Length: 295
Image (cartoon, rainbow, N blue to C red; front, side, top):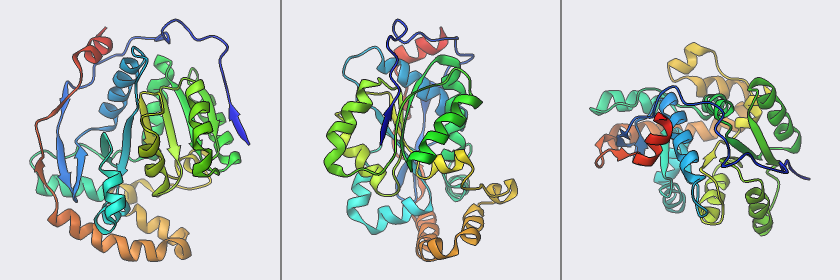
């Protein structure tokens, strides 16, 4: 069952409710991290960059979303093992460090370390807070109908002012994507959250990038189940020491044992051997975007 929430009339130019308190950095570095070009951004910088990009996207009729993918041990290992997955992942506009091990490697092996881990399960709350403050419009795509609906309810109640303009569960086939893309576009979202599992969410994002209209498309895995509380986060000390995978393994040994047994050693090897400094000049945020944020 598909559910869309359409506003009969949008505020002029998607009215920004309050002015940002500070501007995003005017540039950020990218480093090669485990073989993946990864952005050196904090969670706060990511949220403000998202806002700048989304406000800029509203000013044009043709605006394919920036694809924002999460780098963790699983993704790093799969990108090295599977050429197709690696080529798909390389289509991201922004890759952020979802795993703590990636942050540790950047601090140990590069001169431009990543400030902090930006786990998608944390970032969706950062994005919801700034989105509520500035009237951003979210579309939730993925998970079961029940988890999707409950996520929309919780985010709406937790962050008053957030606009969940549409949502759809993740149980659809590739043959239905034309209709789904049209349905998403009709809601005029700023941010599309795609929680369709790996590698499907990345394939969906790349396949439909130039048909979707939004500011960002963020792949978010099982994020909606964390929002609802169906999946539990590890204690803070395990997150800080990079042991959240062990907590998850203890909770779901049958599902996760072979995944971690194969990907963790390979991911560590890749982080140690395919991590180096900046791969190019810092990425510059458009001047027009900075003017919007500084207003």
